[in-house]
Image (tube, rainbow, N blue to C red; front, side):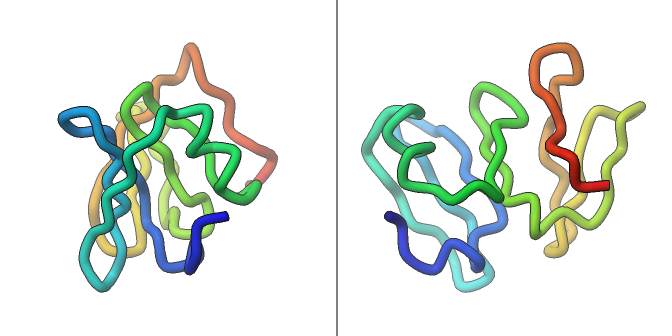
Amino acid sequence: MIENQNEIYYLKFVKGKWIAVTEKGSISYSMNIEELLMKLNEKFMVSHPNCIVNTEQVMEYNFLGRYFRLKNGEKVPYLVKKYQIPNLL
């Protein structure tokens, strides 16, 4: 299990590593997406092949613009056709 998951806004895949973006900075993980998803709780969802979002940190779902706005103000991509939104609304 990955510690302090509630502090993670999202994770992005950059140069072969997953980078967790948090309010305190970032943390990198060297594992594939399947391993990472097994270590994250059910509040995380894949929104894009290179992005995993903490749904508790989502402030706005913009389906027309195909992005989520997070509580830290950042936008993360969402591929509407491939990935499903959990029943959060």
